[in-house]
Image 1: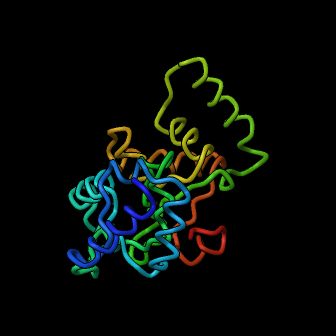
Image 2: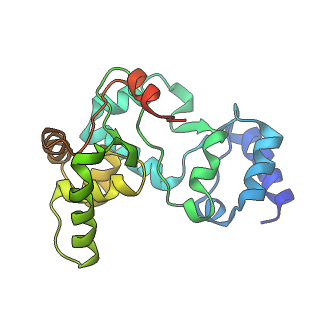
Length: 200
């Protein structure tokens, strides 16, 4: 799609649906120039519908952890699964399979982790060993798999469980073990989490 075609689609989508609702193919085909043009034309306050794969994830979340789903979307009404265009680059081009990370829960505990949430001295050897096991294609425990994911980039426990077909409680148990072993920091409160690092 050309930039003009992307912008025309946005106009038509907003007029008919009240938000920008790209298809998976459109998310994949957009480059940074398209993203910037859309943001310039519509601003960050304009809403877009999450990609189909993320809508599917949140429908799963609604079943397996309804309290978290309610915390996120319970007050959304007609804007359910709609987020700011500020997040557009998280789902386009090379990031087409990206996630809308759960990191701002107000009524339930957050389980969101990034590389800078590892306790540096205590975790260095452990993280290195996990990466070696992965490179050698050796089996990993749930905790080791979570360590690998969080050492690479941001991950929340629900997307992690969904991606690996795990029970959410088993994933949370792995978090507790990593925290008890002083490998990982777990910040549950949204306000404290936002002070710890930028979640926007």
